[in-house]
Image 1 (cartoon, helix red, strand yellow):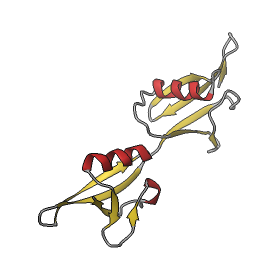
Image 2 (cartoon, rainbow, N blue to C red; image 1 turned 45 degrees about the vertical axis):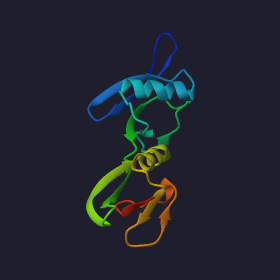
Image 3 (cartoon, rainbow, N blue to C red; image 1 turned 120 degrees about the horizontal axis):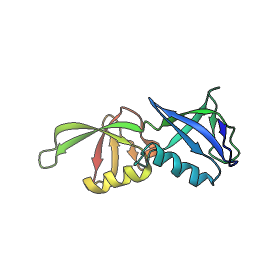
Length: 141
């Protein structure tokens, strides 16, 4: 990390091959927005910074100066089996990745579902927290 002549606090953040210097003199939200802008993050995906000692750091003006690696939330991948509702015959399975509860809710609304249900079980899924990676679900109207 660098302390610039004007007294600002700066950290170095790396994501893949791309490195940016980020000023951390603002609020937590301002630091978050600076990182999103610097790395052109236009999604709602969560992200975090990990330092060289593999410690995940909170974003605030008191965070230690140094080098950080940016990590993006990989989301929760599930499979949804789509049916021909007139014959109740499976048509195909699509993979869907949810990053936020809002993503999950939006998907349900767009498909006209009230929720999802496990294919091999009777468990109804009311929130994203109940989903399990790589499990196959079907929509419930």
